[in-house]
Image 1: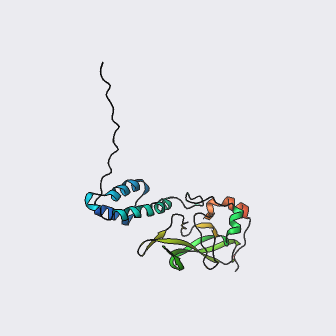
Image 2: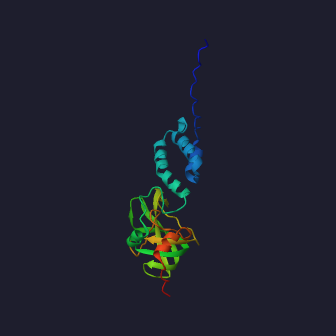
Length: 209
């Protein structure tokens, strides 16, 4: 009787090592989610002559991974890194300001009281269409905090809400009136996705002339 032949499991294809120049370009230019894991692995292990500095590379990958994933996802209040989102009433009660408006400009500014790697914010300027809570002015500014990823280079954090110019939003802003902030863990959202909130908030007030 013929002996049964043992089948060996197939080995996964090895991830090719990348050149130093390729890895530097990968760090500088950025990447999409699909090749991220393969390239990150190959650049983290690297060829034998590129082992120096691999520890730093691994740290950068671990730090940047959630940031890149968050940027690839649509901004919303259902961010995967957030705890449970509050209901409309609880969010309204906790917020410093609640308004509907259109983004007309943005700029990067230094924070007056930086903490750790959080030293700057992206300030989005709104033309307000209606207020439910706040100062009832025609314009409003909302800060989205940014983190330092390398010396002099800043980017949004993994929980940031990134506004787009000329788009309309329902904004729940928090903090001091002189520096309102928001992020992706609040109920701030595009006006197209805010109908549930708008129904519960009711009619707002027009800005004072």
